[in-house]
Length: 300
Image 1 (cartoon, rainbow, N blue to C red):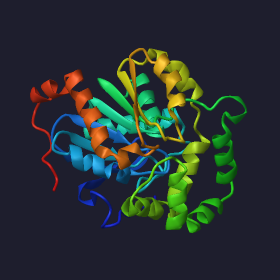
Image 2: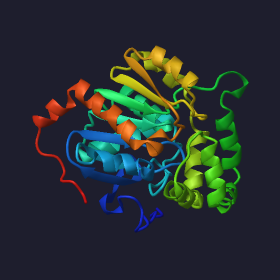
Image 3: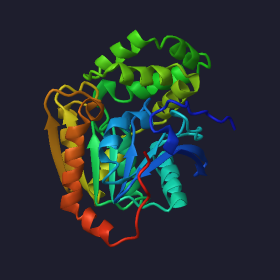
């Protein structure tokens, strides 16, 4: 097993720990105080994508951030289908003895959160999907990204070719295509990740095994409330793609944010924090937390 070293200047590196569970050597970050809040990033991202949101909320929640299998500084998971990733993350939470009352997932992270709830690995009161990737494209485009990922993944030099081409300028252009604009620091973190062949390979591996059709079908059985938050400039999971999941989930709410793209939580963490606070109050998580033992102390 190859250990993926965490850079000393990585966001919240001081809160990082390694935990083996569910067949994965996980990179986990835990800090803050309050009710447990699990944050799940999307494809090709890492814990860094929640750095600003975590700074905003660390005085109100015990935050649990993880790098998905093959991403960032977590190890790989063999055949990372959506159900297998959900199961492995559920095993991690059991190992950590954490039962989050609220889960926030960005893009593919939202799909993982929903799958975990459907399969009984978590019992949150609410799931918040940020730019949620829950719906297949449909028609001729259905599965195109998965097929392309498979073609690229079977070429062993492809991840290194992608990594070698990950200049700051190219990464900035790639992010702009999602409808978002990030500052130099945000671009820099993505550039660091995309220069790592193992990270690129992990993202491609997950995409190559993804299938959202069963998830969309099963969402009619989802018990927690599902709040879908999308920027009106999101080109990756545009507002129109959120309507079908919102109709299928028994309890759902769709919130559209003006002027933001697919990485809305990085562009406007304060706006996302307000949505999370509202969900916490409405679900009664604060009152429930007051009846439990003290949480982790805040990490500077």
